[in-house]
Length: 173
Image (cartoon, rainbow, N blue to C red):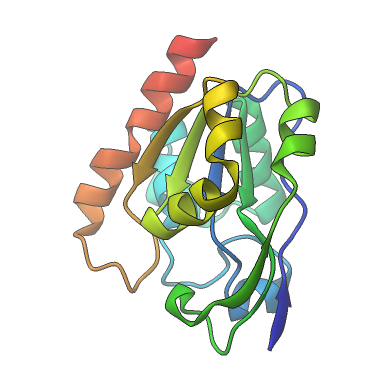
């Protein structure tokens, strides 16, 4: 099945971007990043960026609120791939991939100095075409454990590793 990713969530104030690989079936159906109920992305990133928010508060956030929290913290969100063929949602099923235009993205988002990859495969796809770009822009690149339910690392350990986002983006301001 031919799959197309979404536009980035970003603005000119972003100092960092989180890059995934490609939206899964549920995200594509809802046209919202990380919409699968078992994906921990929004739960983790909100806990990192708003550590005092309650579980009920996190659960009650609308998608637009989540995007706003990212941008208030100067963090963008996008996927490395623009198109691919894939049956199902597993990244391992990706074939015939075409990457997003990161030259244009970084020209438009000049303040971004850090890339956080949501999993190893996102970094692998990025490096396969944009390794020189990352080096020339002196981008700090950090791989975080995937928030996908297929990545079996304990959710508390994932949260712990993702906390580096707040530290590094706060230090960048």
